[in-house]
Image (cartoon, rainbow, N blue to C red; front, side, top):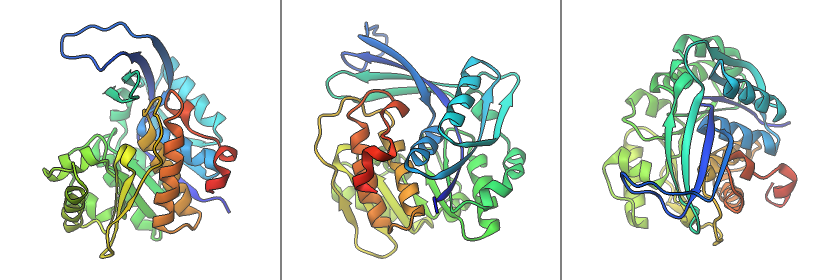
Amino acid sequence: MNPRICMVGSSNIDLIARVPRIPAPAETLIGSRFQMGFGGKGANQAVMAARLGAEVTVVTKLGRDVFGESTLANYRAQGIDTNYVLFDEKEASGVALIAVEEGSGQNSIIIAPGANFTLTPAEVRLASRAIQSAQIVMCQLEVPIEISLEAFRVAKGGGGVTTILNPAPAANLPMELLQLTDILIPNEIEASMLTGMPTSTDAEVIAAARKLQEWGVKTLVITLGSRGALLINGNNEPVFVRAEAVQAVDSTGAGDSFVGSFAYLLGSGRSVREAVERGCAIATRSVLRTGTQTSFPQRDEVADLL
């Protein structure tokens, strides 16, 4: 059976400009290309999992505007359950302003959360049936932290649900949220911000991961961009999974591609290590295309990895 995944989190519209370099403060640059697409960390991760074959439900809030209506239509087109997609009548839909550097594919992102920040814990509880019937619940931090906390409380109240937290953008995390998190997936920058420790070298990344374990998370995957990922699973030895070397076209959404793929693979019965290895490979393929969800491969394109 296809894995059942519930995403409680954000939905945005991405406004992407390709530029010769990331602009400095007070600098104006002329870009070479503009595109608009569907995004938001939660939405991206949900779409990636759905494309691989997961049965996905989303709990999210949109603005009553053209962006919100088009986002709802996109969820439905991806085969995602939209019974818990809510609308705010006053706030605009969330928007991400993204500059992508030509040549390197590196990006700089500003998020205006809009309706994402009006989702309430009471509304999360209304989705208890979807949350507790899922195998995996995914959360991020583009909605208020209390939303992710409530989602994990509900998940653990049903028993047997694996919780995955992608702590992005990085913020101070309540101890309860960490203790309710089965698998924490920050990138190296977020791991550094959470711990106050450097993460430039392999040894530093391991030290930061061990610090996060001290706070109650047993399993950590720290994504390292082109370097791959670090897996620390309980007391086992750290494992570095190296990514294939490619010339990136656009790295936007690569982390979300990894998280969505990882959740699908884990829900399909793969071990944590296998899910990291194959998730890295799928995310690597996503950086070879432009855009966010537009760069995510379909199932038949990564059949060799599934």
